[in-house]
Image (tube, rainbow, N blue to C red; front, side, top):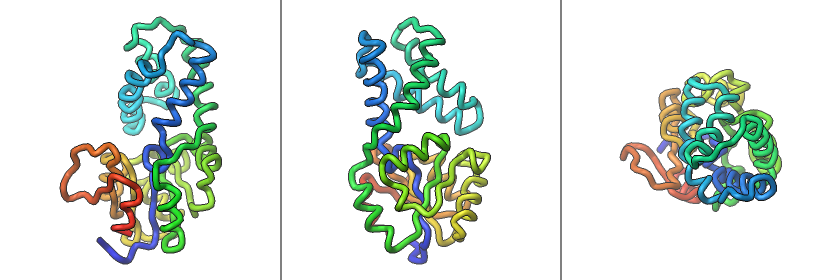
Length: 228
């Protein structure tokens, strides 16, 4: 591990911000008021992998963000064998985006590790999420004070794993790639994307999936203290 790191870049969703927990709470609120017949557990079971698959397509520019927001809901209701109108899907999609940022659950150790890192490094975020939504998450979860720069895919014009977004983030941070490290939960977008762009990387493997042995990884955010 290089000891000359000056700048630490974090992914936001699924790395610092507990997307799954916050997402489930947003859907629970919507369904209780508008679709009480839907059991949240059944819905999330279908939605979680479908949302992940849709994000992968979006990440690789195979669908638009409008298609992402529609498809992940339509396919989830189809998987539950539930008939639902496009009008209802659009209402749920809008409510979801509005309610999602009201929940601020972070991963265990997130604030503690940011407090530990902040005096030693310049901290930054690189996210593929939508700018206005990500800004609300960061502000509502009281994270903004930790980060010098926040790069999102709308600003950069491309998404991770495209090297251009990493170049954009490093330039915005006035950092150098050899002194930078990326931490994220997605092997493809965060880790391989960063490594190909010339940054070091650590895989936040919270779900403990099989990962290449030569990749630095942690299962809990506080394990970053071993590396930084």
